[in-house]
Image (cartoon, rainbow, N blue to C red; front, side):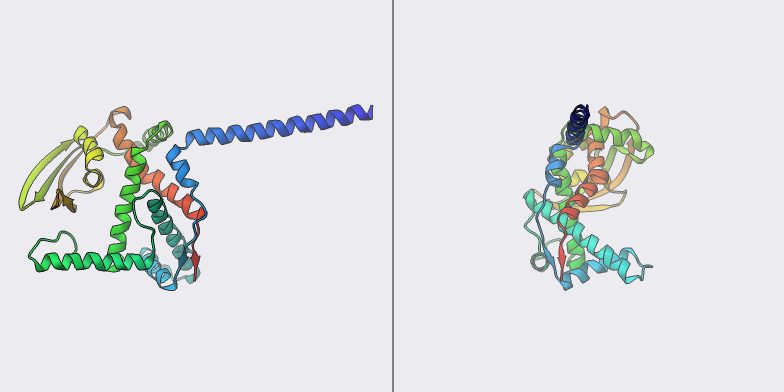
Length: 285
């Protein structure tokens, strides 16, 4: 009798363990299906450790102090500086893995800034027009590099959209209410080769720019009236100013491309980078 009870107990616990393990696997599969494949791959980036020098730490600290002017607690500022450094580290790590930038280092950043400033000085000396800053500081060049990198990563994600991302973007749109504003029309001025043109882009044209001229498209989707954008197009400097913006209210399907991009920029990108930062913490001198 005792032997039968013992067999029953063992069988019960074995069955319980099997069901528990099956539930775990099912949960893992469901979670994987709900996560866009490209995002899942990026979140799995692990094993990267970079040493942050004292000089680099102080550089990041200047940004943290500027964002928290009333905070004087050194322990709090130190925690935020390390978090900021790890987040930046993750951005450039992802960018280099995707082939969007060189492996990041603070010394390389300073070298790139010097080269860019030298290039601008030559243009000014030759009487050529320089758009934006005539000379970068390390802070402004760093922010410029980060902005360009974020744009590149977000565009990479949009080019690799799958069913899971569309589903997440639709949920974001339906739950967002008035927070998700889709532009139906943008009027902007383009100056290139000393010629200024006024262009009106409707929703269809904005979607096309998202595939053919991603830097300009991002600016037209996120910039405000009178904001200025500049780059080089067809080997000529180009300057763009937003003059007017109109919004529309319609369903997800009609605005799918725009909603997906908004979702990537505001929710998916920061959450993804934060995960990579936590998995690849830097070491500090």
